Structures are given as structure tokens and as C-alpha cells.
Length: 83
Image (tube, rainbow, N blue to C red; front, side, top):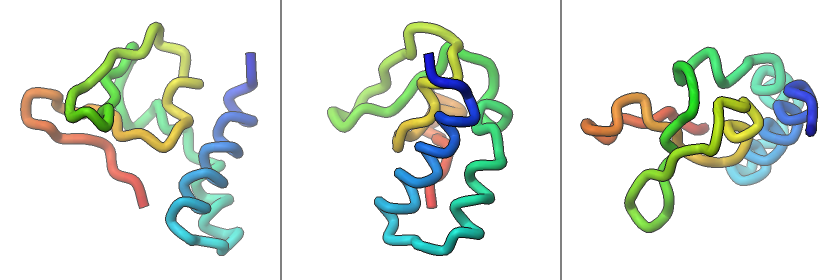
């Protein structure tokens, strides 16, 4: 399995690229912050394009290091933010 540091590097570059951000300082900031500390304990509910949520198979932080919204409050449709 990929280390959390490698997953954070991938995630930082993925969301920055998707947002058209090329500033290495912003990418480094995303790399330095463990996303799991901001979305609560897993497993997590992530938002699917179909309009619903799906649950991650476990509490492995690797599932958070994708360009997905993570439910903070599923009932209120309150999600983590991206760029």
C-alpha cells in the first residue's frame, strides 16, 4: 500500500492540477496537511457524481487522497471543501 505521505503528494498535485493551480507553495501546503484530521474518523462517506454518497471500505486514509468530497454531515449535505 502507498504511504500516507505519497498519497498526500498525489492528492496535492491532483487537486492543484484540476484547479489549474501551479504554485508550488500551495501544492506544498496541501501535501503537508493530513486530510483525515479535518474530516473525522473513517470509514467515510464520499460524494459520488450520481448524487449520493458511498462509504469507503475502511478507515484507511488512502481513500481520502482523491479529488472527492467527503461528508462532514451527510444529512445536511455538508461536505469537505476543495480549492
